[in-house]
Structures are given as structure tokens and as C-alpha cells.
Amino acid sequence: MEIQKLEFLKHLLRCKRHVYLDHNATTSVSGQVRRQMNHVLKYCYGNPSSLYGIARKSAEIMEEARRHVADAIHAEPAEIHFTGCATESNNAVLKSVSNYFYPKKKKIISTPIEHPSVMNTLEFLKKQGIVVEYCPVDRQGRVLPAELEKMIDAETFLVCCMLANNEIGTIQDIPAIAKIARQHGVLVLADCVQALGKIPIDVHGWGVDYASFSAHKLYGPKGVGALYVKQGSPFAPFMHGGHQESGMRAGTESLHNIAGFGAACQDVDKLLAHTEQIRVLKRQLIRGLKEIRPDCLIHSPEADCLPNTLSVAFPHVEQAELLAMLDHHGIAVSAGSACSAQEDKPSRTLKAIGLSDQAAQETIRVSLGCGTSARDIRYALKVFRDHFAGRTRFVNMITPAQLDETILFDEQVYILDVRPHSLRGKYKGLPNAHEASFVALEKYLPQLPQDKHILVACQGGGLSYIAAYYLKSKGFGRVSNLRGGLAGWKERRPDLYQKYAGQNVTILKPAR
Ligand code: PLP
Image (cartoon, rainbow, N blue to C red; front, top):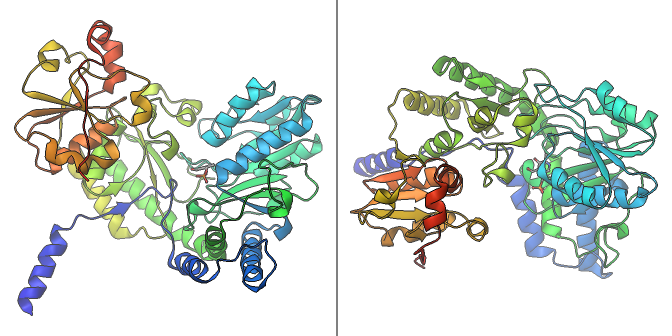
């Protein structure tokens, strides 16, 4: 018995700690949500649009969920429409309202720190003739309502502003913005995705016309969003087909997801009650980081900020290095927003609050959640401390300037290209590279040579950093990362890129 206990303790010591600090990207599904979803998946398979008993039960579950979402944001159930995600909710409003007003009115006012689901939709609408103007934000990401008012003119039909920013956590004064818009007869869309469960929401009290939400940010399932449309505000269906969602969104409803969203919203008051605890942990983290690196720069505002969100930069330390090192120690944080994690461009939000490209690329986002404990924060601080004291294991770096023929054609160097498929088609890779999928790296391990120097590359040098750390942890002795990735090499060595890129590339097959 004693020996068994000892073995178990040894096993625990060997187990890597996992500390999830990326709750703005997504959250785990809570027990209550999981139970409700399991129940629906098991027993409630009727189509809510049908008329017999089991279908009526499904319709009832859906209406119950709608009521829970409405209650959580202070709306009427009839004003809630379920969607596939908040990206769909934002698309639906921006496109439908533009369609309603254009060409009589042409202008939307937004901010430069919106989520890509808004930014890229606005870019699309610009091509259709809509005029989009961005109201500047201050260094903390705040929109000044008075500045916004100056931009409203007779052409303006919509103001689109997020309630809380996903990267730095800034909370906007939506009631003031909505008041100004109303005075000018302009509609308001508030992207409330990051706010639900973190700060109180009152769409009726604020007088916004549209608001978007997503279940997976508040311990609900992925793949279901909600759109609030104030009674009487113009809205035309974005998906055509059946008459579901009062004709607003066609397609058989994802009942288990909707039920999960409803269950998550039932917990909103509990989540709000927990935010003070999260705020205290965030303060401990900030204090600890400032002790370790007094020169670190906190971008998240002190006041009017999401209680869980911390955007922080460490001068002269690339975010890729920190992400890789933290991942190696079981800690999940992110660079900017999860949606732009595969881009190599600096975050638009960080640029809009006045950071240089370099400072933006030295920034990481830490977002705490309900499950985050004081022990997690202590562990994270220990890992940061060890890293900055030079005690963590590093991978070697090869700079784009160093990468010449002597390395590219060295028989002892094995080049591993871990770019995602979507980028491989766009840019040629390093000569003699072996292409493997970053997300399934484990399946390529048996084919990688133990006796060679592995040079890992990707588009911008971030994914490859994580991959290089991973290979080191799997016992590969000599592993290097190409700093700045292919983009850096192409910029620094255009002659070599022209001459050799894309030559002799091997596509590796993952083990089954
Ligand atoms: N809006 C904001 C502010 C977000 O943070 C996100 C997701 O990160 C979205 C919209 C998109 O949400 P979804 O993942 O449901 O499409």
C-alpha cells in the first residue's frame, strides 16, 4: 500500500502542470452545461419545428434557453436569435443593416480595435460601396464618445463598437455611445462577446439596437452564438431557407448547443460574483511580473478593464519565445487574439493604442478564468522568474542573415517546415525542407532524425519556436528555430529566396 502511494506521488511529480490562462480565446465547458447538453443529446432528438410530443419538448428546451440568454443580458426572449457563432451575429447585423440603408445612407462608424469578425466584414462592405470610418482610441483603447459624435453625419446609419476588447480588456462606455447615436437617429451594434459573464450587461437599459454573444466565452459550447435585435430595429435574414428563429435565421437549430448556451447563461450571476477573486489574482500576477521584470509594460488599463485580462510586454523578448517557453511548461497564454495567432502581422489593436511593431510583437495576453487559482499564478510567476534568470532550457536560434548555403545544404541539417497548409500554397518554403503539420507534430516524431541538427521554420518564427521547444522536450538534442521565419529570411536574403525557395521539398506523411 505504502509503495503504491509512493509510486502515485512519483507519478504526480512527473506529470506536467497545466495552467490555462487563455480564457479570452475560449473556456472549458462547465459541469452544469455538460450535463444539460448530454441530457439533450441523449433524450431530445426531436426537431423543434415539428409538431408531435418529442419535438414539442425540443422546442420547449430551446425557448427555455432563449429565456436564460435574455435574462442574462436584460432583454426579452423574442429579441434573442441563436446563430452559429458571434462571427455570424456580427456579419448578419453589418450586412443586413447595410443592405437596408444603402444607398440612401452610406456610412458606418466603428473603432480600429474591433475583432476580425467586424473588421473583415467592414472591409468587405467597403468594396460594396459602404463608407467606413474609424473613431480613434486613446492609449488605453478608449473611444471618446465626444470624438465619435463629431464623426456622425447625415450619411451615418450605424455605429459599431465592442463593449470589451478581447486583447487588452478595455471596456467602452456603451451607454454614452448609444445615447449619442440615438440622438442622431443612428443605430448601434455592440459586440459583447468578451463581456458576458465578466461584467453586467443591460442591453435594454443602454438602448443598443444589436448585440452579439458567444457561448464558448462563458463556459458554454463552441459553435453557438446569439444575436440580440431590439424590437423594431431593422433586420433582414442573413441565411435563407426554413422559418426557424422567427424567420431570422434559417436552418435546423443546434439544440444541444443552444441548451448548453442557456445553461451557461444561468450561471452568469455566479460568474459575476467570482470576478472580484479573479481581479485579485490578476493584481498578484501584475505585482509578481513587475518584481521579476520592472521594465515590463502593462497595456491593459487599470480602470474600466475586464477583470481577467492582462496585456503585457517584456522589452526585447519576443512573444514567440515566451509563448513557446510557457507552453513547454504547460502554461497556455496567447499573443494578441486567438484568431490572429497564425498571422505574422503585429496586432491591429496594439498598433491602434500607439505601440510600435516591435512592442506589439513583444506583447502577450494572459486571461484568467473561474478555475484559475492562486497556486496557478504562483507557478506561472515561478516559470517567468526562472526564464528571465536564464534557468529554463532554450532552443538555439538561427537568424535570417545566418541562413545561407552552408546551412541550407549541410547534410547534417534537417530542415522542418511546420507552416499550416493555408500558408504553404501562398509562399515557397526553404529548399530541402520537410513539411509537417504543426498541430500533429507528434505523429511525425518517428521519422525525424535523432542524429541531425533539426532547423524548424514557419512563416513568422512563432509556431516553429513552439515546435522547437516540443522537439527538445522529446529528446532531440540539436534543435534550432529560424527567428523571424520565412518572412524574415525572404526580406533579409532576397537573393537566396529567389534562387532556392521551394526547391526539393518533401511532404512528410504522419504516422496513423
Ligand atoms: N467578438 C469578439 C470581441 C471576440 O473576442 C470573438 C472571439 O474571440 C468574436 C467576436 C467571435 O466569436 P466566435 O468565436 O463565436 O465567432
